[in-house]
Image 1 (cartoon, rainbow over the protein chains, first blue to last red):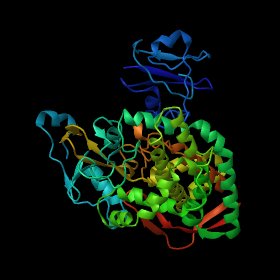
Image 2: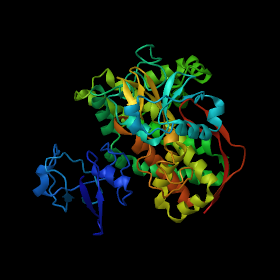
Image 3: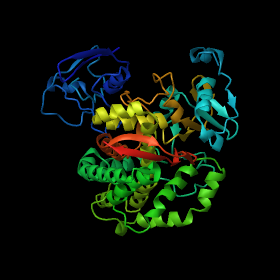
Image 4: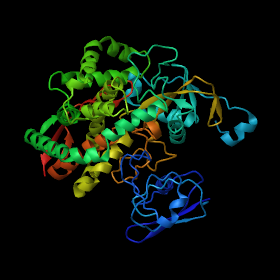
Length: 93
Length: 407
């Protein structure tokens, strides 16, 4: 079972267990996490979620459209490195 | 139905509850909630003998049907009529009544036309129009919240944003009413709407043509994608038609729902006044609470098990979005309008690949109207008889007389 730590913009963090195949956004909304609006439900339409992925971990994401210049804190434990991840999130994941 | 679905796979398919409910009857529209509860409690999937369709009314099943478009397709129509067996009343929509991969291409175009970047461009104009409208209504004090606000506001911004000519706009709301009635069964609402449809259809077909759409509007933007090859020039008018079908009346019902909520629940209106930044969520919660789009159908492409019950290929499945949005299995105090509720995951705009492509326009309109009200209006009172409007798919009011006082 993947575990995700969401680090909010104020530095607080939430640690939660996701299900296999579940996106970070889905897990966050299932737990009712503050800051994750997910207005469009994962259609990549509303831009209420953003994710910054640390360059060092870029290889862990399959089909990532393009590299982001900004490094970020990203904590993701218990997930296989080659597992495709959809990580829309307003805060840093 | 007390057998859990986990047991059903070993014990064989469960017997399906048959219900004599007609979810397209006037008596149902007057008060759907006791029937919604009956449908949810009867089982994860039910059979409606009146129209020979399966029905899902619990959140979990509605969500999974919406999110499995390979099994539950849209290309055979999202109304009761099965396009494989019956000729559609109009040429099918290239986006709503389409499956991947065809849907993927047209959806991408409309997503770009109605993107967050577009919203940024139109936002100030939409907000100013909402403020002007509320100021005008504050002069009048007493008015009909449906005709004078829920309809008048979208009509003052959306057709212009689309780039429509000034003449003939009176066809827009009747055309949309027709489209949403036509998803229903062949009852009087549907038959009457189709009988009277010719002038509205003629108007809409004409307005979808490129020369009739003002440069810079949503319509012209759609046509521009035919220049770059994303769509063909034959497809562009039909995609413009989607905005004419689903872009106006739905927001009328959505804003109407929000106004009806604020008028009925003064404590929630007081919370909105205290913090106008809640306007967007107050609108979103109204979409959950009232579910202006109540139902859509899908058609099964193969035999499938829903909640332990086997459903054959080529069956129509009716999704009760409004019932799912008030399913106590998913929502705490599901029958309460709460403007600070975490509404994420509600299916008022659908879910998955067909989730409302115009959702950002709807939210923008709802937000700016409620925000203007929150800052300028002190009280809202219902001042006359509330009348319901009847449509096979849309839930909303014909008339909501209210009186307001300035803040």
